Image 1 (tube, rainbow, N blue to C red):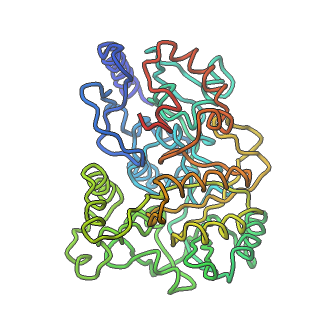
Image 2: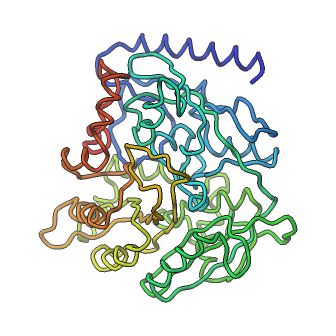
Length: 456
């Protein structure tokens, strides 16, 4: 960073610390954010939001060193726009534009490069963190705050907030060429995932990206992406065309690198369907600038707040529904077993698949994946009818039980139903408690179980 950027950043840090001190200790401090990608809905808090808007820009891009200094509240949309002109991108770009870098590190993130690049926090070189005790510390893998550096991922704002992160970048090419491979069952799909992720290739061509879409138990696809300097005829899925439907319609495709990174955002994967945005007539009337995930999420938040869908279900005398909005990771060799259970007991489709493997031997205690294990993220986002006599949370709790039995893990961005003892066992609660005592001894930030499970 230049001297001007350093001075402006230092001034913003000073102002934030003053603001934090002024909030006092009457209840937990939370971020004052206009957008969120969490699916733990709470009533809006009054008067205790921490304004971190000053930390929402890219401070510097080092093209030669392939690194960037980035404000923690910077959206990936802005981060990508700042790095692509340099021929670079983050190692992992989560699929929704308004996910912030700090949010992806504190709350995890994943995408189709995760089979080779792991999770977003693995490309972080250093972080400046406002901790619960009001201090701003520099955390690196090997300094006096290394425990905080390793314990920050999956802490969800219970230890502090990342104000600045220095991250690795990777070179890109102008286009991504796609191949959609169909499989007749989950077992064959899982076998192909394991082979492709091991070799980073398929049929003699390099694979830079891989994810999958399951439409039915006997219709599973893997989409393989490869960078290209020479591809032409880019397709545009930011308007009337819908990306996920193309997977069934085409065996190959080409997108610009920027459109590839945001291919899922336009329709929030496929969830815009429930809001009417995929209806041909409404699609033409819907302004293009509002075809994006944060718009849909705000609509859902209003629906949850005023229980509009629940009331409509009751008026139509339809069964009460349970939202099932989750991402889980299971070992690749248990993927078919999990999908068999899911198709039988839950039945939501489509389903997203995204392989991931940690980049090296370094582990992250609050989300304890094994370094030598290939996992597959399974994402599903919809609602199911309650069966007669079934209570709310039944299906989600059953998913949690099966994931644990299969040696998997569940992301915590949505509702969870673990007991406190089970939660602390699965996510190394002792490590988080130790960090909490050191960096937030006064408990000014929310508690981990309170925030991630109780939804407080």
